[in-house]
Image 1 (spheres, rainbow, N blue to C red):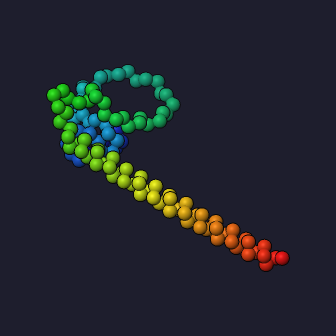
Image 2 (cartoon, rainbow, N blue to C red):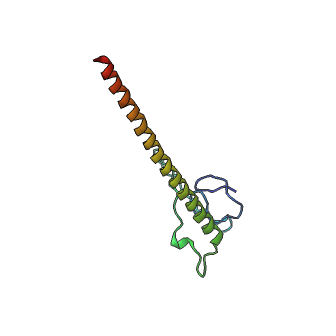
Image 3 (cartoon, one colour):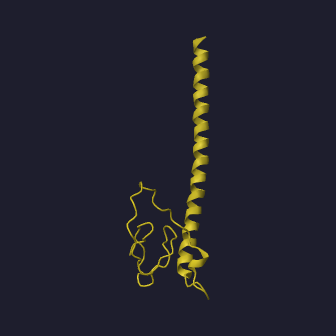
Length: 116
């Protein structure tokens, strides 16, 4: 099964896409297509942006999306963990850069002394 919004493969029977958050509508639940007259061609527009699920998308009397919510919350936790790892990497890179700059400064000082 593929998400109609982002095109990624998702688990069969999913109610929410775990990649883009789009609320999925089963084919039999989808409204019947309305015949439209062809519109004049417009310049190519940007693809639609993924929309977060809205309050209207939740059925009344309990949402029945507990698994999808847990999956999305787990994805948030995973991404937050990756952000923390990246922040630590950035700090290490800054330290390494300063060490290299200190080495360059020391070498330049040595060159000045040798040129005297």
